[in-house]
Amino acid sequence: MAGIPTDDAVSRRARQRALVIAVDRTGGGEVDELKELLRTAGVVTAGEMIQQRSEPDPDRYFGQGKLAEAKQAIERSGANLVACDDELAPRQERNLEAELGVPVIDRTAVILDIFADHAHSAEGKLQVELAQLEYNLARMRGLWTHLERLGAGIGTRGPGESQIETDRRLARDRIASLRTRLKAVEKNRGVMRSRRQDSSLPQVALAGYTNAGKSTLLNALTGAEVGVGDRLFHTLDPTTRAFEYESRRYLVTDTVGFIEKLPHQLVEAFKATLEETVLADLIVQVVDASSPEEHKRAELLAADQVLDEIGAGDKPRLLVLNKIDLLDEEARVEARIRRPEAVQISAVTGEGLDELRSAIESAFEQTMAPVELLVPYSEGARLHELHEVAGKVAREEGPEGVRVRTRLPLGELHRFDDLAVG
Image (tube, rainbow, N blue to C red; front, side, top):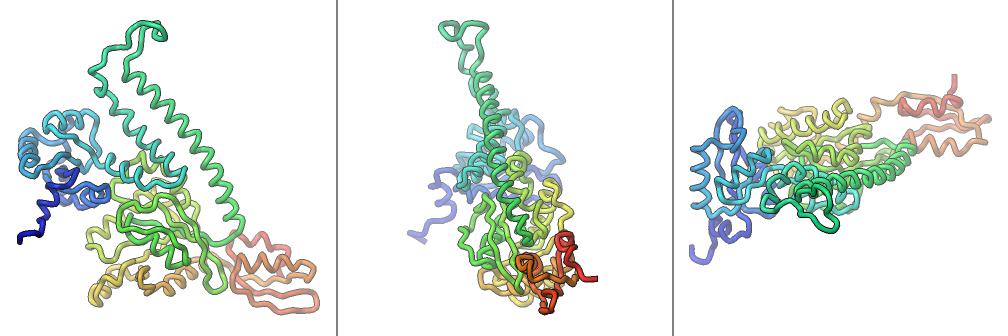
C-alpha cells in the first residue's frame, strides 16, 4: 500500500543495517538473540546468512563459497555492516572486512556497545571501559600500518617506538589504572555489603536472562521505582531494596542479566556486581514464561553457566515464571506440568506475588531452627535483635523476663546461646 513503508524500506533508511552471519554447529540455526542485541544497539537487521559446518574457518569464519554469497547478500539488502554471532579472532575480523568490503563486528562488540550505552554508575562505566580496552587490545595490530616508525628528534632519541606499540602500552597503563580504581570501588561496596550482612536480614538475588522482567519484579515486590525498559541489559548496576512479609524483612537485589555466550571478559569485568548473587542466601531465578520452550531452556542454561562461573552454582534457587499475563489458561497449565516447582507470576499485574513471597519465606524457613529463649528485662535491646532476625515471635512475660518462642537462621543461633532455655 502506498504511504506505508515496508520493513525492507525501513531497513534501507536506517543508519546502520547489518547482515547477520553465523556458523551452525548443531543444526539449531537461530540468530534471534543477536538480532535482539542489534535492535537494542539501534541497528536494523537487513538479512541473515547461516553456514552449517562443524567449526568456523580459522582465517575467514565462512568458507570461500559462502563468502561470495554473503557479498551478494550485502549488495542486495543494502547492508553497510556485518554482525557475527560468535566472537571473532582478530585475523578473522580483518580478513572478513577485506573480503566483504564493509565493517565487521562480532557478538562481543555488540554487547560492549550496549553496556557502554546503559552504564550509569561510576563503577559501571569503569567496568565497561575495562572490558572494552581488554577486547580492543588484541585488535590493535594493523590499525597503524600506514604509519612509519617514529623518527628521531627531540623527545624521540633511541630506537624509537612504533605507533601500535605506543598505543598498546597506553592501553595497558589505562587497564592497570582502571583495575586499581575498581578495587577501591569494590572496597566501598564491600563495606556497604557487610553492613547489610551485619543486619542479619535474609538476602535474595534476582537472577536470570536479560529482559525477563527482574527490575519490574523488584519494583512489584518492594515498591521501588527502578527504571525498566523493553531492551536487553537495561539494568547493569545492582539495586537493593527491602520488603516485609509475615513480620520479617527481606533484602532483594536486582542484578545484571544473563544471555547465551556471555563473553568471559564481561563476566570478569562485572564480577564485583555479580558477587551480589554469590553472597545472597537465595537466588530467585526469573524466566520469561511467554518465550518459546527452547528459549526457556536456553535461558536456564545461560543462567546456570554464569552462576557456575562466578561460584554461585550451588546456591539455593527458586524458579519463577514471569509474564504469565501473556499466557492463556491452556499455556499456563502446560507450563505448570513442565515445571511444577516454579512459581507463576506477573510482575506487571501482581498476580502470584503473594505466592512468591510465601515461597521465599518457606525457602528460608527450611534453614531455620526452633528456639526457646528467656530475655531478661535488663536486656530489652536483645528483643529488638530477635525481631530483626526471626520475624514472627511468640512472647510471654514472666517474673524473670520475656520468654520467647521463635525460629532463627542456623547461622544466627550462636548470637543467642546465652539466652537459650534448657
